[in-house]
Length: 407
Ligand code: CTP
Image 1 (cartoon, rainbow, N blue to C red):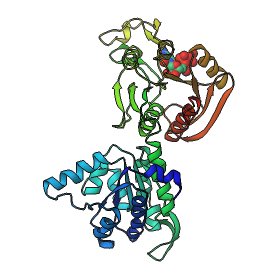
Image 2: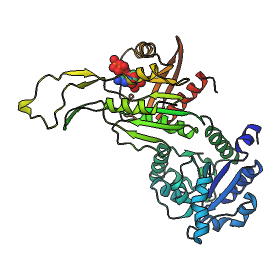
Image 3: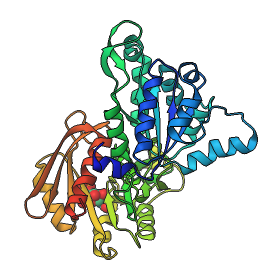
């Protein structure tokens, strides 16, 4: 094992779940390697896993008691279920079967392993293994997509000879690839530790009356992805989020707001002490001068709406930033992307700006993927190719770290 990887693993507490399948014996190799790298490894086995390998094997290899029973005596259960989850820095589900993937995707907690994953707030890494047909089946792939969207990490299975006699995809990934993924996640978990990050996300709504408002199609997906990635890197993260249907992960403290003025007030309240501010919200620039408390009837409605400007939140953050706070903006544009974004970078005195297109189809608003250009200084520029927003978020935070000289 490489020195870097050993350093990443040493002294870290890892909860390893082992599922039932012929590759359960290969999980023993992973647990053994983690222990040799001086990680503190705790193993949970499902009932099916114990048909392939005995708990004693994992007990001997991990040097810790193996947990199997959700209904063990209360004291043991408390240690197993709550204590282990609190202690762990990473959860790894090895040899994940189609059934376990389905349970994890749908939040079922009918055994100790699935209950621990559900109760956990730390990163989760899954290494599936199953027959090719089961792997390729639509429900399995849909479950994987659902889990990936929630931030669960995967080590994809390899192709090769399977125990069922077929040759194809579905074989548990190689030990080395699993260990590399574990090392990567544990390193990532400390990359932003000590930082306090404030992110704005989503649209704002500016009401004319209780039934009508001015807004835009932003969903908050990009800002939520950034908040989630920063939290996964060990930062303490607050998200100030406009109206959205999307869930915010429990690793992120979320303040829900509706209007630009509410967003402004929440940002100013949480700004002190922040080391990084990211303005990913699509803030409405104007609000109606008058807001009626009752629904305006069509017959009484004016044909023109008088507007007044909202505060420019990020410009004010930039002006009153806490010492050392790095300020990152977004620019959603429909034409002349980089020229407009560079104007905003300078006008709002930002450290960098992430430019993305509103159009064509699949542009920035609402879509699951995004393609961006990060701009800084006079000429600094990095293109991030179209990818799921979680991956784009990681690329943005990597660039910020490089600009700040910490990576
Ligand atoms: N922003 C903000 N407060 C506002 C308007 C924008 O904090 N009232 C922030 C956004 O979160 C983003 C950046 O400013 O980080 C640029 O937002 P954008 O809407 O693209 O730019 P505007 O300044 O509104 O300019 P325009 O509408 O003319 O493109």
